[in-house]
Amino acid sequence: NAGVTQTPKFQVLKTGQSMTLQCAQDMNHNSMYWYRQDPGMGLRLIYYSASEGTTDKGEVPNGYNVSRLNKREFSLRLESAAPSQTSVYFCASSTRGTGELFFGEGSRLTVL
Amino acid sequence: GQSLEQPSEVTAVEGAIVQINCTYQTSGFYGLSWYQQHDGGAPTFLSYNALDGLEETGRFSSFLSRSDSYGYLLLQELQMKDSASYFCAVRSTDYGQNFVFGPGTRLSVLP
Image (cartoon, rainbow over all chains, first blue to last red):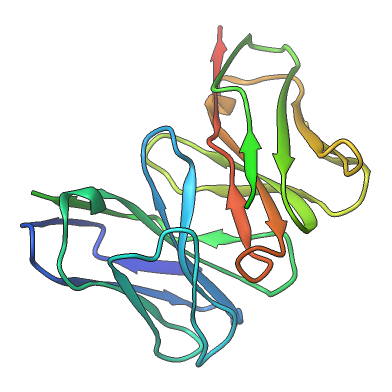
């Protein structure tokens, strides 16, 4: 049982480049999330999707776009990367209304 | 808006008991979760409290007081492997009832 799978695990970009982080879950969860984690700041919600076909902004959505491709997949796109987007990105999923989030292993992004 | 506060660091010795506190301010509260994260790893779920009181899961317990906007995680019989960061997270009406995380508490367990 793979759980939540993120790709890539590591990426280095130059300022202005674009990229997409991919996330897939095999637990039949309705809700999916993208968080970023910076040192000393915990995890901050970028975007979430309560169900297939819906997406909503979280705390820090600027500079990002998302797509809920189907129930399993939720991608995060950086259209024009900036050094401030250097961070560790975590995808998560859950059954709506419960207290437990299941996290992927994280994607470590560096923007030069 | 909302905010969560946790101590930044806690140190304890093997076999001891440690309590990590979390205070929160939120407009509409549904529940409080706790997560553990080892260096370089992903957060993993420990517990969830939606109602006042104590929830126990093995060596770990979590407590919630909704009237005080306060919760804590209690770790007993500390082991070296418990050295990690611990995050509280509030589920509230903000952002579609999704979770907002505290800044985290780094626990160091000494031999």
